[in-house]
Image 1 (cartoon, helix red, strand yellow):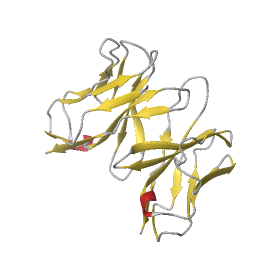
Image 2 (cartoon, chains in turn red, cyan):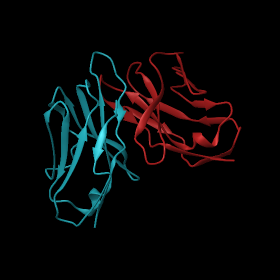
Image 3 (cartoon, chains in turn purple, brown):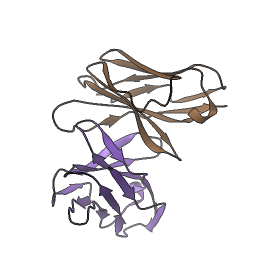
Length: 111
Length: 115
């Protein structure tokens, strides 16, 4: 079946550190992949997406590359800020409206 | 645009009471989603409407839950009777529909506590 696995949190880093949040998936075919972010007290919002193998999604300094060979879509940022503290969700598209969501990874950035 | 609007933001009620959550989607969006978020189960899709018609309600946990969308600018999620295990954050999201996936825009959520 379809599933998304994210690394467990919380992930705690110091400001300006390099960030990686791992996401792997199982799916039939070649689905689109997404990262959503949830800031405290808010709803989720789309951070970036990739629709086919080898695509790189990027936004606000975050990047993720769709790796078909490893079925992965890891989120990276070169230098995190305190304002990046949030919960990050990896998601897999299985229809034109439905997503399979990862469990979310809480990121804490300390000044 | 004001974004997706949900009310109330917080609801505390006693077991057995009826709870109604409300959502106003972004103007022009014709797809609407209700989600439930808990620590144990993560984010779950409860129901999906397209052009005000329920298309997929397979995520609705049981008959105590019902959802309506009487027009393009309003939807409700009702729980009757409520139980402590219904305590969660409920999100409404909207998007435009089409042959490919379109970004879902989430409201701020309603935090429900059933005592």
